[in-house]
Image (cartoon, rainbow, N blue to C red; front, top):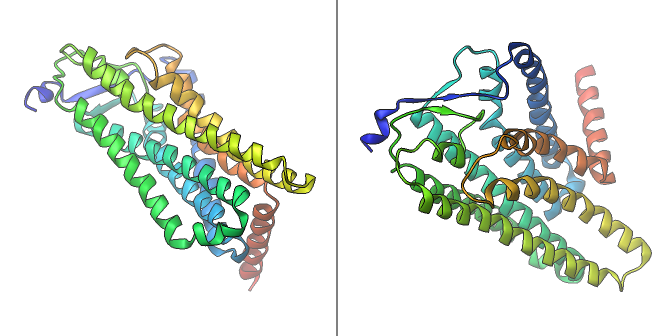
Length: 309
């Protein structure tokens, strides 16, 4: 660990060197981050206080919204502050901490999306046994397992990075610490470690995506025997989940399932999965779900009545 501290801080090159662009981005990302927190927090509160949203699906959706807040908060606040800073620096240990929590929350989201697909499979393919299979204890265990899976995934990534020597240069061509940009700054041969990191992150994404895909193939096959109304309701619910899966997994697979190298387009893709996807998730699930929209309206009316008193 001694040679790790030859470099005491890293410098982010950020999204753009242009000062005018940085000021515009500051306002834009500040508004986007506020919308992420408010939108996802509204989902969590709505599902916590609404009695009609007590099914396992909404429990998982509430957990997903909480993960989204945590996930975007690992990068967005630092990005926003750096857009107005002359020197966009982060300590080595701050960088490692950001990297750890980024992959921990990201891994938890991947596992949680997989759990949500399993929930839809049980609800559609085994409706008579749904409440007994997906009871509260099972749901809590599944969410806890998702968080633990994210932690183990992130720990394995950080343990590969920590022993590496960083002796200069210290400029990261990104706006946050991620494994591949940081790996480029190491003063030793990182080919094998790069392969292990790609195998870890890429394999996690691919296996989870295959499981998700298989779940929905089985669901679609099962829907052939249901009524038109049953198919419509099932496809509406599953459609929201599939949209979120594609929005999240697509960029992740592109970034982490390729040789350990970085491309100029990586920063724009990172903006998509660290900012845009957490912003869109509440909109996707609320706009396509009549029960969620109704619960939000009821919560709004109750809040307004409380304020009047």
